[in-house]
Image (cartoon, one colour):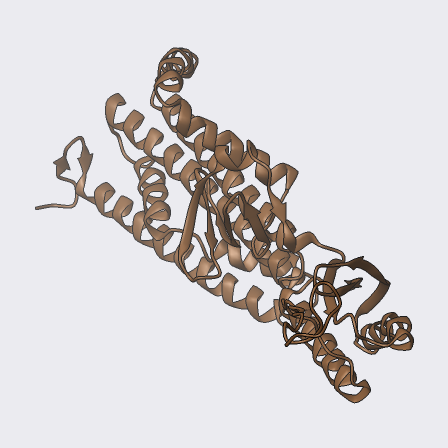
Length: 359
């Protein structure tokens, strides 16, 4: 076969030249992308700015098969091809560019969110939750635009398509009200941030720490270890107690002593309790008083506050206060009250009802 022989409308020499263009373009683009990424990444390690890290990360997401499609289109410009083939190649190249642009943009969004989470260091769970959700929404918008651009490039009337989707969307919305309700509720949670990952929630009879906030459900890990899955629409329509946002934790307890406790001890007990509370770290004493004369005890009520919200710290502090009070009662000879009854009996062997002695 001679070099000048015509094959599919072009000489063999021209086909070989076009193949060389494909090889050179593909290899050149691949080498540039690889060496550029390495050089920029190496340079980025010597600087504090994040811009060069972003460029290196984005270029690292370049897809070889997309560059190959572009190389084939460039090579086709040197050949005589029919109108249909030229149209297909041109549209394929445009689609490749659009997809590669979507990949780069999505990578840039992911890079920005990951760096933001690293800077937060897990300190602000609400901000991290919002950032993760915005990352998903941002990438969803990017790929929706990529799809619309591809359809437009293929000659599909996008306006008509969107109109049809709008009419169909109404029917779908009516058939999937619960799903859409959970979806919009998740956006409400993300934007309003009533709770974040790591917060401890009390929802009716259920309680647990937030593990995951999804588009349809939120998952909690209960104190017993099981996972609670609750629909987002149920969450936004009910009252939620967010113990994770507590600034102070209120503590209170009542202690009862017996009725034969000395008066000076009754007067001193509130002072003993106050000293024990103030001796504990992260506490603020509020009050302690004799509050009630019960059926079998004299009751003292005490209220104090923890300046840290952790439940385990609160329980440790309350235990230390009560053990200290128990020790002080033992030292002072004060007895804790417990349910008792005293029965008084009248002897029958003494004087009679009329005052005379029994025989």
